Length: 61
Image 1 (cartoon, rainbow, N blue to C red):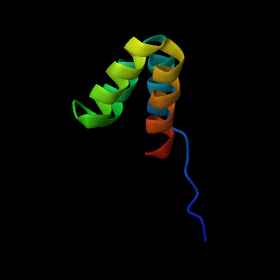
Image 2 (image 1 turned 45 degrees about the vertical axis):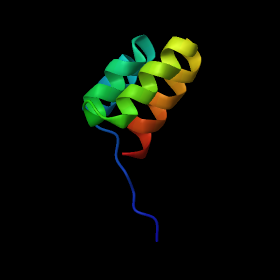
Image 3 (image 1 turned 45 degrees about the horizontal axis):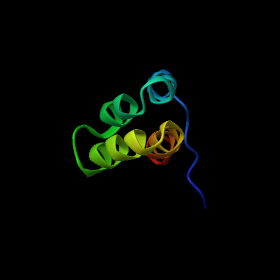
């Protein structure tokens, strides 16, 4: 059976941060690591790919 996930207030704040500044949302979720640097590169290459990646990182927890 699938495990039910709840959305917390922290998740909402991280998603808002991810929309405004994608690397910040990733940093708040996973810290400075590979995903953070990937998101920096994606954001430099295009703002939308950075947002998509950040929201995906936050949502998959």
